[in-house]
Length: 85
Image (cartoon, rainbow, N blue to C red):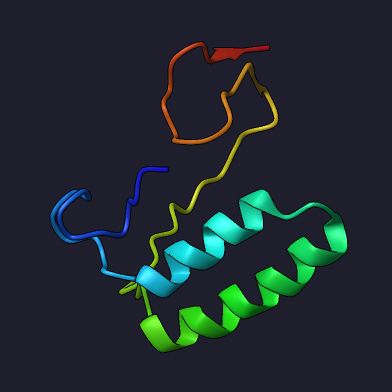
């Protein structure tokens, strides 16, 4: 299996986390849900040691919709396909 958290295989900036990768491989090969759950708990604990990602902020787009607009697309606010009722 391709090791995405290896500094030689991954895109620059990706973490080096060999224990997390080994646990991920174990989880994928687990024979049942109970085993997957036990491995998932180990993955969560290991993630606190390795800290593979650290969010540095969130962005919220405030929006308001008029009740006479239809066909608003969900997700990123793009005013295409919008029309008055």
